[in-house]
Image 1: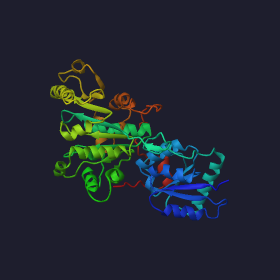
Image 2: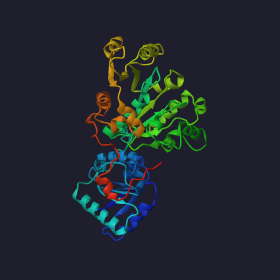
Image 3: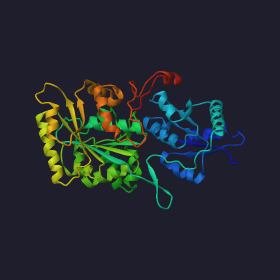
Image 4: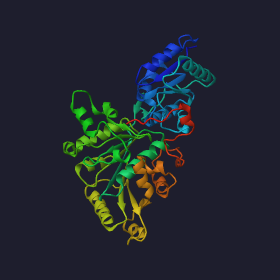
Length: 426
């Protein structure tokens, strides 16, 4: 019978060293493994064999890390998980339960307390069925004919419009949030409005790097873009990762359509869904984002210029031989008594609108909060009207439901666990 195995998932070695020290006198003595990235788990478990307990360290304490841990728990439900974070995670208790956490420790933690937690986890593991020897971690993987695991590139979902102010960024951020929240998959939003991107502003993020920096790295001698793309992303508390637009509009001129294609393909290697927010134009840059997209959401508002330009936009797509089978129309900011009715617009576009969204003050409020409206005001009319359109994108078997009215980040029981004020990462 083999000795039990504890896997420490964290970028830094300190937690792994402490775990190894405290279990030194446990018999049978557990073997302590370490892994820095979720994407490496598959290889480690294939080479080393199954593990009995997983300890997730501080690098997994943000929204993106918790989303990845949910995927690990889905694949290894019989492996107890201990969370050891240096700050209170910006999540609700339900999110921790969804990752299979049996204990939550605040670092630095005393050796005795850590040992007690690990012994409980090991005892629980003994009572459960042995875990599967190989897990499938995000992004999605599939078996090739030889029987080994190969990555399945993520889906590309592009948001566009012919007129400014139609709510493309609003749609992209809510789409990203909904998929991350309800699919359990990894989601990346790419801000392709290279001159005046607003994704970071809408989510109140302060990205250190941008798409321009990522491309500069590719041109250097330090490796290919697909290998390093995640180093240039910034995580939002909702679990969505963002690749920001350039900080300087002049840098947009140095980015070409082949660059855009490489960026999207690199993101697809790491994420299950890649949501692309584009500017209001039909440039080569934008057309590169259309190519290969599983869905193209085209936004319009309830006014004559926007409706007219929507017709021109769709006609132009046909002339450019851009496939229109996956085009989905969305009518945003719909109001009554503005001189044009929704029914009149619907008659002009026989393919119909995937969603008709009302003008709502909750949208402005959510932007000021730095949260998608589906997270900030999930029970609002505008949030409910987006659900059918977005739930059609969920993997088969996932339940499409709205989150409760509380925001993603909340106080209550989780706050009391840590007995200290919430600290916000910049």
